Image 1 (tube, rainbow, N blue to C red):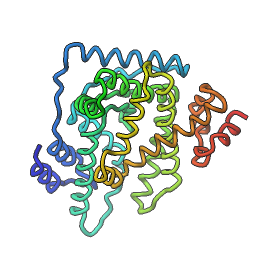
Image 2 (cartoon, rainbow, N blue to C red; image 1 turned 45 degrees about the horizontal axis):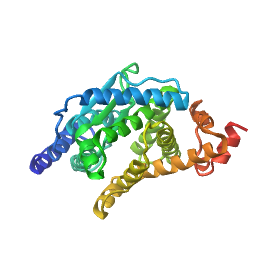
Image 3 (spheres, helix red, strand yellow; image 1 turned 180 degrees about the vertical axis):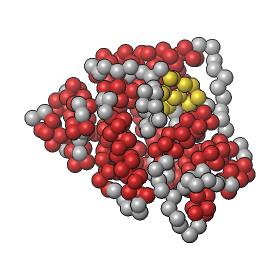
Length: 318
């Protein structure tokens, strides 16, 4: 790990884009230990078994037709950074750099910000379902990533059995595969909201409606995943739920401040708000009623309905 190499990469940011993505990736990896991928005997088969079992159980409890991606990768932190730099570049590639008085300075600042973001996430993300938004080849399969060094470290920090914790992560990520599989329109919907928001940012405006829709959709995605986890995970999980919720809130004041500055508190709010919405739906009409959110974009709850599941139920299932 080398802070000097990271600073040198950021300082050398170049090109025509508002962010030098190559420099951001190099800078993030310079300040992030990759972690070990020395798998123990049977560990790779364990990941495959966890994914396979999660698919079976989620299909059973949710009655959703879906499959898991063909691409299932056990990664180190550098692998995760590389994969996600590509995604961020695709999503944010529409930002117009504009003229500006000091474009080089702005590019360096932006590249430095992304370097810090990728470094922090690379050290903390456990698993990821990647829908490969805005990929050039729409037929390209989605992917599942497991960041083994982070899963191992988190299992130790939370004082839980590694294979059991690994299985929990697999179940959570496969719930997202279930959502995107049950709603083929979901990727396009997210892409359109992202592009609308980015286009207005390029024009110096902030499209509140687009970002509100995007936030509502991601709240549904995270909340439904939490709901399925509660019904599909095939082991006692109260201790895991408690410890993982505590982890999401951050371990100390400095980390909580850092997460807030990076906007990561929004994701925790999406988990909590989405879970509360679906708990209300299930209490009123049962698990099957919750699946109505995937019938089409018009079935997604509005920002107002997320805090009043009864309103959503009366609209979609009067």
